[in-house]
Image (tube, rainbow, N blue to C red; front, side, top):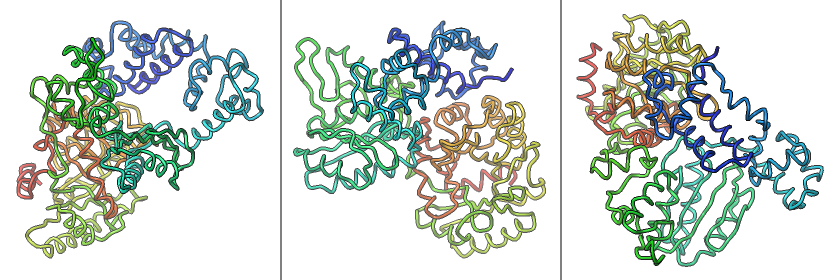
Length: 579
């Protein structure tokens, strides 16, 4: 029996929620499965380990019913309830819900009235004009479904933050250049720096919204205008991303920014606190619960939290993962910032698959305010990346020493490697070679779909090696193309803690690995972290902020990240490890 992963079980619960919604079941039952699925997706630990400890019901949103279903899935690999509901309602209907304009009721009608059960069948029926004969459907509704299917083809479910953020920043920058715009911010999950984005929310302060709305919907990068109102407009960009822009008066901006930043669960907690004070909180203002009269307008988010008796909560923490309780207790973490970063310990040059020389990478890093870097070109077995033989590695060391000497005393260039952890669990260089390097990063690049026990042991073998300092992008994920390797992260954390090995948060937005939940768990266990760009060109050095934001989402404090150390502290640490 193949073991089900956290994401497998989360997907089952998400499908159940969709099927129950199509069936017309209670909204509370639907929400229970959706919230349970989200909890499982966010877990930094394996469900089977939590099950073994008998602590499933201690997880947020996991009661006795869902816990029993998790146990059944983990034990048997199947769920009888899921079998029954998919026998009753075609599972393929779930895919239809991804089409803009198709909700649960319509999907159910397409199935029951026209026997349409797949997205392909829906597209054929719409293009052949077979939907417009249904009550409540016309040519416009049919075309909207065709357009929605076309839009779905142009995009995945969610977009990498590395794609979404530059697009959103460009739109915001252009709108803020308009004379009517007073200020503006990106909101939504993008402001919270989630690794993938469903759509983009932008808020603008202005007294006259019309010019801003017009400039937005007539942009050259707009594929379709989804809605054009006096203070809110929605478009679909050529890249397939939906962007919503709202224009607000300055006096109400704080409540709106807080509301549209989210998360939904964080906002629910804020509203609960407001109700205890006799206030109702929405996107516009605080109102008196009894009279409905607006009693507090907030121009800033700080005013929203002050009204609630709370300190300001940074956007990256707003996921209802303990930040409300920490704020109430005065224990919000002192989060790491981009300004804390002094080094980048993982980068590549023309010696392997990078585009710049050692000197060029060093100059680019110094220009960005860094104090020290480590050149970590690929090791010999990664032929596709022009990995270095032992002979070339030693030649490179001489070249790095020469560049380091020429850079002066205010900047240090160290020699390292990103060494492949081979498919059989052995390392790419012998210990006597590793002992001559300043820093050793070990990474998984190949055979990432090995069975859980096998690939976990490969990583632990590297962690146990006394010469390995850092594990690069530990789970091997690529967003959104490749799911992470199926690792036993409890075992990985235990080994890293025992051997003092650092785990990387790879700042490239296609990796962001470790993710926020696992980074937070690592910090709780006393494991040090590194935030590196894995740069292959100078522009990649600008990606650090994605890694810092991921760390902030994981409640990471600067003292737990080795990139915040000055050069002397890093060298002392390396000497203490015998390097």
